[in-house]
Image 1: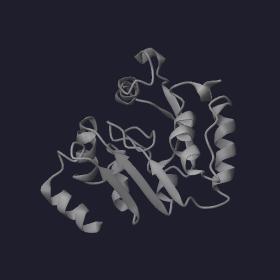
Image 2: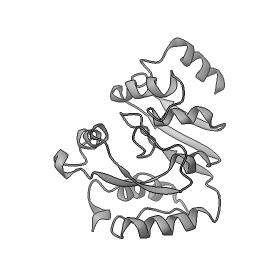
Image 3: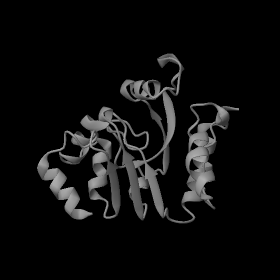
Image 4: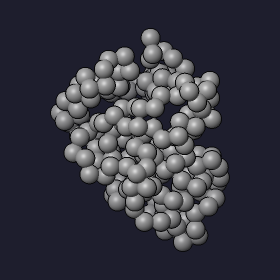
Length: 182
């Protein structure tokens, strides 16, 4: 079963979040069913009620969820099949999720940028020096599909946790501005 594979994001979420906090209601993306069936199912669920809290990832290439650059900021879909670019795939390999680049999938199902931005609150934890360039591109510069996570600058209730290394390339002006907001 793919959901038990070491690289399964469903497994990661269950082991490291859902089971630990006793989360009552959640929807995981079923990696066994066809992508179109999964998208149809989770879209129907997400349209029943707004998202209270979105936990999102920022990739080494600035991706938000798995929306690699250049990201589609305009689609009305809730979930889409995305093509994973080589930097994203190399990140998965570098994190030890797959034994070789050839084993890393070239596509994934991802919540869209627009759907993420509809959450009442967004939380991102972005650690490590390998993410410093992406953090700088996303939070020192303007908003751009070429730095997908930069869109988080527009959300009124986003918290981004950085460590010293991931924040190391941010300008002092950005550090001051973001610190003042918290």
